[in-house]
Image (cartoon, rainbow, N blue to C red):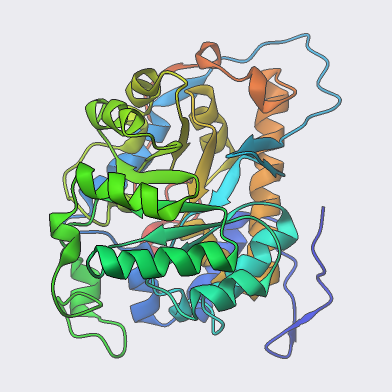
Length: 372
């Protein structure tokens, strides 16, 4: 399926993107160095980010044969919403550096494609403007930037605006040191500082805070940033509707394990009592299929989402999702699977990675040093 390629982008015809590699290359041309560093970088040594990729590469497929795969259905549901494919847009802060319209462009792309968009509280314009920008389900990502009275007011606005769920991100009690952005900061941001000065309310968020926020939200509630099976089990006990396995794309704690390394144990700990969302290095359809085979209900994309928007605006992001869907469909067909519900751990097993991971290792003929 093709998007409307005849439309103009900045006065030029929309490129004919046929691979995600072309999208990454176009994004690199369109982004300033600070914006590029913000999008692709991670904390300190960037080990966690590379481990995310390595953890995905350590799983190999075991295909089944002699299955009628003439029709493949990539659709699924998440929190009761029908998705065209099992890929949602993860929350990205400072989207205004990737799109002149901030988060509204991402909302439009998600609605046009047929998936869920996650709105970060860290990105303009207002949550109301983003909600009104396009139809389609939306998740509101919450960081605590005030006390419970502040949260009560924000969550009332979220409900009134029509958001479908609230996602509390809990892996950011402190803002990490991201060397690329410290050395080459975004305009208007001082090196090494948090985006918002003032008290650090996130540092005091506890399980009791989660309980209060869930009550105040009155919406399906997601806990994002879970890496421990113990925390996943506790989250279910506290009534969350979805556990989001994530280490912030390697942008918070350096030297952490990859998200795919802990996904199976978290799925086991949740034991079907909540849905499991996964992110961390997802760049290919095969990554999507691996995560679903190990129990995820859906995966979130971050960098790939940003590259799509930077490469071609709303249509560029829609095309990115289309290409990821094509890769997912192809992987399912070659595995002998016709719908995502058929995927399980029998289709994967641990294997040896064949290359060292880096930002561009999902595209072996696109070495990272050419872009960085």
